[in-house]
Amino acid sequence: MRHPNYNHLLYFWATVREGGIARAAEALHITPQTISGQIKLLEGEMQGPLLEKQGRRAVPTELGLTVFEYAEEIFSVGQDLARVMQGGAPRGLRPLTVGVSDEVPNLVAWRVIAPLMTGANPFRVVCHSGSLDTLVAELATHRFDLVLSSSALSPSSGFRVYSHLLGECDIAFFAATRLAKKLQPGFPRSLHQAPILLPTERSPTRRVFETWFAQQGVAPTVVGEFDDSAMLKTFGQSGLGVFAAPSVIEEEIIRQCKVRLIGRAGTMQARFYALSMERRIRHPALVHITQGARTVLFGEHGGASAKDAGGSKPGRTVRDRARNGRRTS
Image (tube, rainbow, N blue to C red; front, side, top):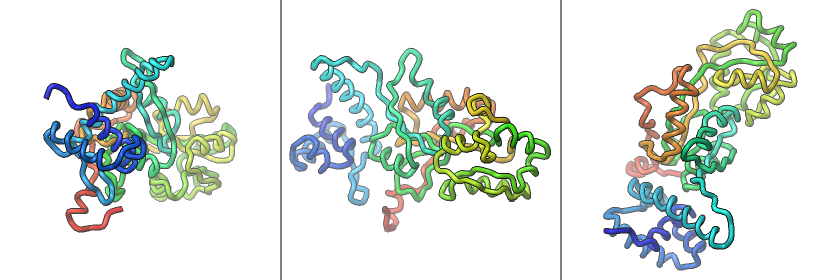
């Protein structure tokens, strides 16, 4: 095969991007039967299946993911060419769409993503924030290239998404100057009945805090709960209560929020993950992010080990459960 049939490749690319043959047919203004036939021909060229059924959805196989990655780059360049021919300015930079979970501090997201926007081969980054469930659903339909999260994806999620550990660090506690001066002596015992701002009950990190408080024998007074980490810090810097953040951005928080460090919880760790559809890291942006985070950002905090370098397993996938006759969502 000298080169693939680009019409066949376009129909496959549109099917994955749109989340199914019916939606792709609607977007391309052709019949679903035409798309199905063209994809079958492409599978013959590629010598293997590109799509598989998961419930009512058609999702890419491992081979399909590889083909889609190349198709994404091919048609992104094609769209750029069409824009230039119509008198527009070329975008030039490679596009990268990133989802950032609400629980990931903006400063951490910035430290992880910013290196992608500089250097010899920069990316044009498009960031979306939201709940982890929403972002993972978008990732699973290939609307995102990767998602930044403060927790690994649960095996029960129903999505074949892989969690790659970027690194971990201590949790630090902060407060406005007056409150911090009061609580610094005797930390962490000083947190007992102190006003504190925490993630909401639906956050996985909330249970981490509660476990640590119990281990220290303290019971802070929860005066506010937030899904959004930026909003939590805004309330904290106003003096309403103590708030916690990863120690890896400690200096930035003190400088930007004009607060003081109370103390660090050395036995409580914040972990951050890049979620992707790749079991093995191949996407150049994901390679750049993981290498930078593990060696620079989290390196001094005991980042991911060599064992994690290839990405962690997602647990039992939808396909695994289907083989055992279990209902999947």
